[in-house]
Image (cartoon, rainbow over all chains, first blue to last red):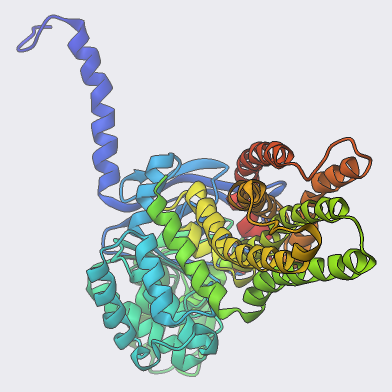
Length: 337
Length: 245
Ligand SMILES: Nc1ncnc2c1ncn2[C@@H]1O[C@H](COP(=O)(O)OP(=O)(O)OP(=O)(O)O)[C@@H](O)[C@H]1O
Ligand SMILES: [Mg+2]
């Protein structure tokens, strides 16, 4: 082998080998707001979260969807440096949460809406928010601006000086959301922000999150509300102790809807049905003039079905993919576990 | 350790404290009740029976020791409230999610308990000294207070006893799930005082002497520092968040 360029020292080679993975890893982590690798949490014998790996890009809205006891809160608590993971690692905004210094820096750029609001009931909304502004080391000017901005947006400005103990549940939740934003965090993490709220209050909070999305903030939210996840999130992780799947709401829906087609025919007779059944594909349902057929591979199987029906003398009016709702997709995913 | 952070926490707790009438009443009532009751007892039991001046003086310095004990007792409740109160309001989770160290939170809690307690107790001891002077002047022929020993008690003995009570309350709170339980656990802190009391009773030591107050103070200082580190070690974020329900 001929050498084209370089020193003869073997040291520089070692140095290169040493530095390269660090640079790659570092730049890789920097591009994600949240990077979770094999995160695991055991409480004595209970496995709460098992080997979780996922990434959330900057400006993404990531929804962690899962039934009760799936480990959503446990995951959020690990990411917010509140409880240490049993195994695995995570970095928030490039900071490793398992180091003391990293966890301090990570906490500074996270805004957390915990599953219990945890406000000081005897203090007013403004007093609560000012306290947290100081705790997050945010400049007073920024804190005061944010108090005004968010309390006005959330329709609490008039009652800002009343003690939070007198607030309704929805109002308290709004204060908790404002609190999480008081220091303009890069990353907003919310544990079921609309749980236990009436439809109107949930909607206000949801619309508010959609508004925040426009500001290009990274948001991660826990929910067991599918509709909410679908409306707000750009990416959804389905969790049940371990991550079942991570995908966009559209793909998640499609991954199931893709397996069923509906064929509208001018007329359905026994001959046509026989021809389809003979293909031995999957479940077949008949709904007056429409046939619903489950397929293993929609791209490959659809032409086969269409040809078979035509050959049997069927007149096809239209062929469509059946869209399964995200809810059906979710129940199918979680149910299969 | 950023004291600014601790001060922010203390200010917040003091704001909450001021809005809790029962807490305010507790910090002031107990010292004042003692301050009034002890001279009354002295007057009715001793002076009314024309006891000799030496007995009266002995009793006065004995009573001063009670102020050491309540200096440790009063902050117990307040500290338990400050910490367990956060637990009950579930406000520890968002607080622990801020970039703040356990030490900063602890010192903040110490300050928040110390300020009202020292004000309450100083008011109490001022009332006590005044009433003692008024009731005993005729018997002993001079104003007993202020004196060198009382300065040591006010400036060294009592503050250290308060810090001891606070540290004990903190330790108890990190183990207890309600203010009452924390308070009961914290009451164990009075055991050393009980031992001192008994030793004084059987004349092994004389509690009244200024030297003894100083010796006890040193003991309290060492205990406070030790308990501070113990409670910091016992303060387990995970347990607090997942088991405190
Ligand atoms: N301190 C603990 N000790 C033992 N088990 C725990 C502890 N904390 C959580 N768990 C268990 O871990 C699992 C995950 O709990 P987690 O609260 O994370 O679920 P979740 O997805 O947030 O549920 P929910 O929708 O009800 O809020 C549950 O089985 C729970 O019982
Ligand atoms: Mg939860």
